[in-house]
Amino acid sequence: MEEETWKTAITKVEPNKVCLRGYRIDELMGRITYAQGVFLADAMLVSSIDHGATPPSCLAARTVASTGAPLNAALAGGILAISRHHGGAIEESMRVLQEAVRRKGEMNNTSEEMASIVIREYRAREKRLPGFGHRIHTKDPRTPRLFQIASDLGIAGEHVEMAQAIADGIEKSSGKGSDTGTCRARL
Image (cartoon, rainbow, N blue to C red; front, side, top):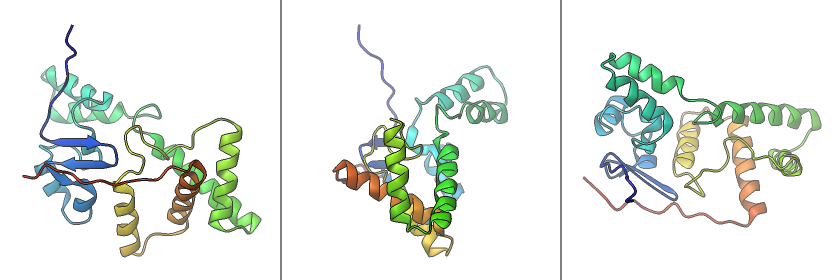
């Protein structure tokens, strides 16, 4: 039996590259407005436009919409499907960062020292650090752009510093490099 697949011209996701209508997401971030992003994404939420039509939250929204329910109900269905099991690692990741920043201050460590401690603790428990790592990307191309925007706006504080230290520590200790690649398709 032939496997069914979804095809879309809206997004293209490959290891270390995410494109929206042929444009790199990390190049669009901070340069286009939300409305412009919605226009490019055919009304998908900009924050999750890299995922296309197949993730559970998108399917939930599509299922609700297929019942004839209003758009706001379909969007609510999709948003409510986001949890710690799908798309919600960021909440637990922030808890890790808050705890690491708190402990860094108590222990008078550098961010790099604290990151090393956190990484060792998670490895000892054989647990993944939430918010670090991606099923497709070895280095998510959106992250450096978000950090740059935060820096440019003067809001990149100790939590961004800690996130970067943990990411650098994971990369260094794993021995894996990264390649952000490029998107080939253009409008």
